[in-house]
Each structure stands twice: as structure tokens, then as C-alpha cells.
Length: 440
View: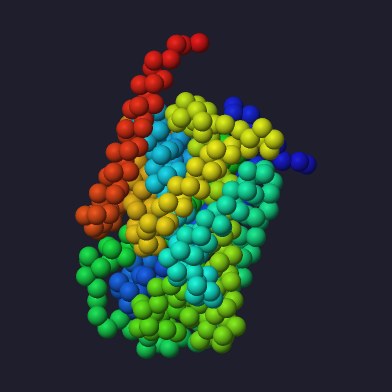
């Protein structure tokens, strides 16, 4: 007997189950950052880096408990944007959308583009040249733009290899690396300060973020009351296990040298575990995984920009469609140009921190949305997921997010505040322009 098909008011069919959602969350979160960050976090904390992972694990659990509840109450597509808009209105929703596509997507992709260039430069040191480096970045982005302007189908082909590209090398390193660990390298000889833990947790959020993107398809998740919380904790549980395992292996194999390897720490680990071919395997896996992540983002995110422009929230030129290929080519090009400018002017760590700050603001907005919707509509029904402890979890989530954001340097905080200010200004300008248009 066939399963009953669920159709939404939006005309979408609810076909995404728990396993599919969990796998999608895994794919969205595990990108190129994990190939680089073990060394960065170890440079802050050494063998005690595991503490930052556990703090991020707790914080992410609190945050996604909020997602689990709001995701079963606001059932239309849009994910974080839809939740914040439903709770606080279109103005707050628009600012959230800017933070999502620019503050998070553009900045995180720019950071990954820097990481990809650094990785390829290991095999081709010529890319360290100040002229060849931006030429390489521009050529790579031009290829991705060309593939995605030609049509979504060619863009999807590039994205399909993502899961295999990152899972095979990471899985091999995790399994065999456990047998090469030197236990002495895992001993914590000096406990870190709270400032050190906070600074590392801030940048570490870069590799824990992205699960919320899987909820953009909220309108296509079947039985969201059960599927959303189960899928979230299935995906995030596997991710935390993988990250803890990789950090332990890298620390156990490299010891104090891990904190000195900020470019390709997992490659250096694999070279000791397997020999030179292992290091090359991770370098290739890193490059392919980051490239696939970038190809996936440049396929999806410009469609968000296009939709926002189509709805009058951004300049209309961004809603132009290619006359032959029927793709939002202006949005694709603008997205790539932003990425190139930012990547050539920043370092991986700085861009990762700003991207993490942007997504943490979104997480704070979702946590507040839980409290606002509860106040407006009452407690969730029996059929909806309910966070235990009434308002305790959203409040703890907000406190932890605030603590992590306070670890930003003055320059990083100004950059984030500037981004929020620009988003607010654009929202006000577009609202004013739209208010002057005659009603149809």
C-alpha cells in the first residue's frame, strides 16, 4: 500500500523524511572548513581544543532545539528567514535574508576560496605570487559562473560529487589514524583561559554552521513535527562525532606541531599515518570538497538573491533572467564578484570569524522567534515538538551566543556591525521605494 502523499498550501509535496533530512544536514555542514580548522583551533588551545568542540556541540544543541520547535510551528519554506519573518515581520525578515546570503554565504564562500587557494598552493607554490593568486581565484569563479549560467542541471552535476569527495578521505583518515595516535600528545598540560576558549569557539562555529540551510525546504518535509527534530539531531550527532574524532586524530598524531600547521593540518596528519600518498589524498580531497561546496553555493544562493529582487526587496536588475539559458545570470555574476573581492582582501581566519558572527546573529534571531511565537500563539500543541524547560533553552541559547560574539576583536565587531547597518539601510531604502509605487 503506497504512502499517502502530503501536499502543502504552497503546492509542494512533502517527501523529505528523517534520514534524508539528516543526510542533507550532514552535507550542508561538512564542507571544506574541517580540512583546515583543526590546526587553527589547536593554535589557540593545543591539546585542550576538544573543549571548544564540546562547547560548540552544546551551543549547537541548544540552538537547534530552538530550530526543532519553530520548524514544526512555521511550516512554510524559507528556513531561518521564514521563522524570523513570521515572528517579527517583513523588515526583520529582510535583514535576516541579507545576513544569510551576504553575511554568511558570501563571506563563508570567500573564506573557502582562500582555503582552496592555500591548499592548491601546497602543490603549486607559484600561487603564493601576489599576481597569480587573484588570477587563479578569478579563473575558478569564472568557470563556476559559466557552468551555472548555462543552467542549473550543469551546476547540479558539479555538486553531486560533494558527499563522496569529503567522506572517503575523512573516513579513511579517521579510522586508520586512531591506530597512529600517541597518547602523550593528547595530555592537557596547561588549561586555557576563557578568552582563548571563546576565541576558538567563535571561529569553530564556522564548521558547525549550515544545518539551517537544510530547513529552507521546510515546505517539503513530511511530518515535520517528528522529522525536523529527529533529522536535526541525527545529522548534528554524526557531525559532532566526526569532528571530535578528526581533532583527536590530528592532535594525537602531530602533537604540538598541529598548532603550527594552519594551511593543511589533516594533510600533514595523513602524511604521517599513510606516507606521502596519504598527504596527497587529503590535499586532493580538500580541494575537491571545497570546490564542490562552492559549486553548490553558487548554484543555490544566487536564486535567493534573484527571488528577493523579484519581490522588490533588492534592485530589479538582480532578477534578470538569461534570454537563452533561462537562469538568473546577473545574480550569479554579482554573487561571484562579491566573493572574489572579499577573498582577495581577507584571510581565512578573519573571513571565517565574520561569517560565524553573521550566522550567530541569525541563530539569535531564531531563538528569539521561539519566545515571540510562544508569547503570541501560546505553547506548542501536542502534535508539535516542544522544547523541554519552557523558555530556558532559548534563553540559554541567547546567552551562549552573546558570550561567543563578545569574543570578537574590536575590528571584527565593527565589521559585523557595519554589515548589519548596511542591511538595515538597504531594507529602509527598498521599503521607501516600494511605498512610492502605485498599488495595483
